Amino acid sequence: MKVKFGFKNAYYSKITVTDGAITYGTPVKLNGAVSMSLSPAGNEVEFYAEDGLYYSDSANNGYDGTLELAMIPENFLTDILGEIADSNNVLKESAITSTTPFALLCEFTTDDGNKKFCFYNCTASRPELSSKTKGESKEIATETLNLKIRPNEEGLVKVSTKADTSAEVLTNWYKSVYKPTDTPTV
Image (cartoon, rainbow, N blue to C red; front, side):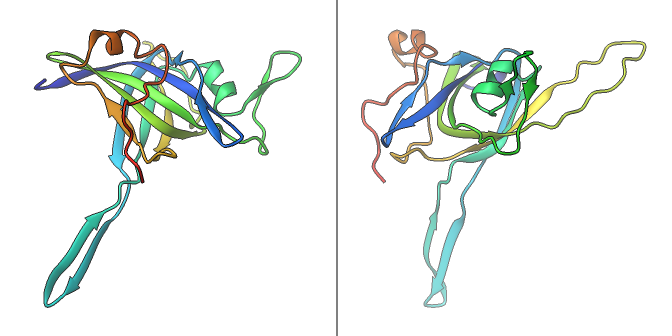
């Protein structure tokens, strides 16, 4: 893989915690994936002694960023952002409702196929609401989620496929959240 030029197949998998055990739900498609932009989260630690840099390290606290969609699907609003439909099927947003963590699966189109990703511990904040009147031509307005991606309970932030990842893993990528065969310990 030399270059990437596309973004598609965004899915979310709701995280459930029962008696301290974390399970991932069946991935659900986030239709209308437009773009994703993530910046590393964490800080650099530099310690000076003996008139120079004596110790240096960095913390991997995951990523902060955005996920842009044509429109945020209603199932994401209810499953993850905590909106609830009333008896008339009107969605309501409540100040006392909490958001739910999720895994995010997606892929980048590359010159040599596709590179698939799974981010294990994501949270999303409520999106901005905006729209404008239609003029002489239609302009598509998108919606953007602000994301925080943090290490999971095992210290894992993300996994991604390689050019030689097995066909079985690639075929099953969106059927369930990928579990690495060996996981780093914290």
